[in-house]
Image (cartoon, rainbow, N blue to C red; front, side, top):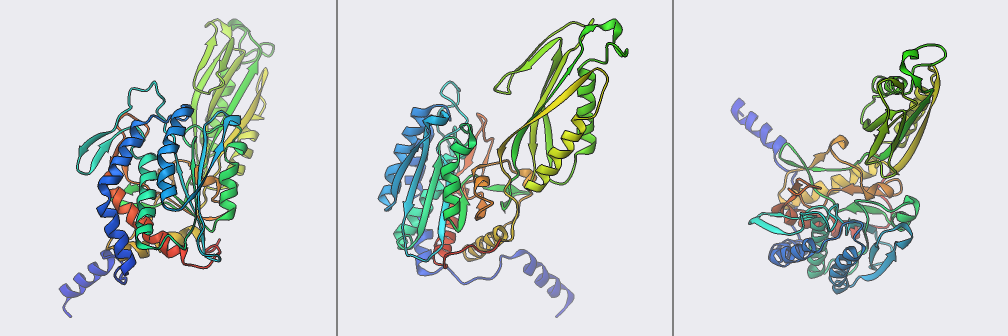
Length: 440
């Protein structure tokens, strides 16, 4: 073989999808069903998007629940509603399909709510062409819910849903979780403990124009540093009796954070800072106020921010270092540090990688390129993190999009159909495997 042919063969081997058997008859039915029902599912997406379901719009969240409930019931799912009035939110929709005993138990995760409350100007679905649509939650996560349903309907039509053990949890407050989180996520955590595999239908991540697999998500938590010091006339600042006020030590603490904390996959943002003779950060962590003058030594300074890490060990290590920094002495005052843990991390595991490997087997069957692992720095926290410590997990089975959480949120409808086909084949194959996780 000449050098040109050798080079061509090498390039083909490195760029072509892995070889796989063609779709089975049932898989062909699933693929054809997704394509045939595109119009039906775009209509459903439009109805869902046009119903406002901001996390605090409890009635709106319940109306979206009602729109989806009939879809699941028609597929043979038993429904329950977990009211969340105790945490100030609407609730969670749980749909359960009992299949053949001894087979893998699949947990599908999505959410009913959006970041757009009723007073937001962005409220309506709009088609932008054959493969694009704009609207509040068109992708996050109403597009994900539709991708899930399109996949389940394809399984139903092909007869592969009949024996599948599937539990669906659609939370009503993913974008603004009720507190305490232990109560708001208790039912999701319990579902994770019952499952062998968790599949999250939030949006498909793309990198460099390629679809990517997400086997990890970082945590999301908050922290707050409060420095208190002597106040008085500014002419005495830096003296032994007056001290250096509260703002200088806070600046030193934050500088030490920046220099001493960095490690791979860790970020720690400072979101708000305030200080003066008096100061406070509001309970919602979104507003701050202060009062003082240039000739008054500031008696209080406060900074708040977030902390995101890939593993519990990284969180513990970082929090310990932050406490050590805050405890360092300074002239004329003291500092305190508090943490507000919110979303745990979804660490990368062998089981998660095995799931992505199974998804890539599906990609080969569909003639799609294999999906690489997404850098976890490129994805925020989400509901799947609450179950990831207990079950093999994969996130990103919803559609690709742009501008999420803004009035420019646009869903890629072509990717929605691609994702529904991937999900239908993946869930069918997993549902036929014996009960038990892949590997941890």
